[in-house]
Image (cartoon, rainbow over all chains, first blue to last red; front, side):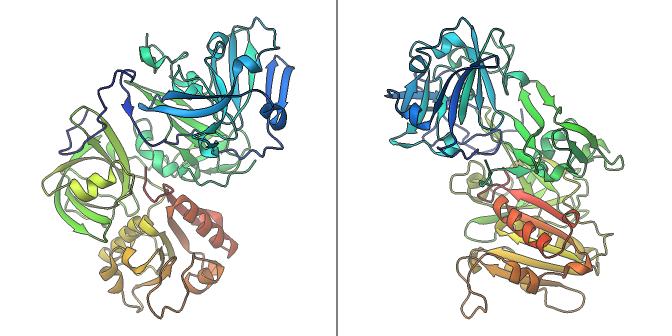
Length: 200
Length: 97
Length: 243
């Protein structure tokens, strides 16, 4: 740690029981990225659920938007320490998308347009814990925030909520994704502060 | 799919972090992209620095060249995206003179 | 790795940009074009690191000048441009960079193209040339929004055109001075043809500024015949800050 810079305020956080440990509150919506923003036209967009080489389900934008949606408010917690509370979304629950999918695969590997991936247990995608979100704050989700559609898994750090989501591959063995393979925690529960591999 | 947003920096921006690892100047180093084979100066790579880690991408094909993450007292470095990096041995960075 | 510099002078370049002069013990001689990383640490331990190009010419007096532009939503630049006072201390890492540099041994024609705060490392090159009494032919094309946004105005103005000097051309993108021959607008092929070294002279080109500016200017330089390996670039954030 370095010398203290006189008068540099740092990030003071409201003492708020709603924030996971080590987080601070932000009112803007930082854009963090590992690569260029993909620009996916709606007539090319698709979302698939795969297992091995089998495509179990596929939606294009029209059939995706025909699915029942939910509107909800939730909190976002980024591993880079900012938290944004009470964000409002519209999306399709993963429970809806997996309704006709029969699988005993315990893990998922989520793929985005571009090369981003993230992994999580299937249990964390089901039971009202995850959505494919396409509207934020009453507007179509902007590309810089993951539009046309992104995964939202608010109970885990935001890197698990893959932007520009294009599909989920069902896995019988867990495979670490983009950040999980380079030092970040495999699961990522913000309430147990599981930021990095090795964190309890 | 094309990139029309100029939301990247370049290899110069990562040089400070990389100076923790490389004794030689990395910005003038030539690196070959393992994906498309283009060889360019690392200074010309597209750098995405605002996420959970640093990601350097090939300016031509946008595939990952290098990733770097600081985790407490460790640094994780992945250079699978480059087939080689060629550095000038006369260009020791200042702290290594 | 981190050295501590003491602020010995502050000078406002524009309404939003300030030059900070630091005295840095054991500062190695830098080369024009290099930058430093500045680290700020709050009392709660939170720290932020940002890169800033060195504005000063290499000198033997352990002096480092940084010119910082204040970004509206910045975390570090408002502190550096408004809060920092003489005698404050800043942590620096560097000098950094071995590609985007001009060394005094270079004798070929040099084309400098600056977008906004991208002028900072190029000014270091101009100052380095002067202090080394180099006769390398330099041209600068400096793109700014409006006259009030120009950094180092007096110093640039003092570079009168004559054999042993730097020729400076301005491109105003939003508001031009009264009676300016060229209407406000971004640099384009015509301006490159008028105001930069012909590519047949094989200049080494240095382009610095926001990413979109650098991509556009580089494209124009290569379209006018410069080889890509003769164009060196340094990109600041989309808003002009090296983040």
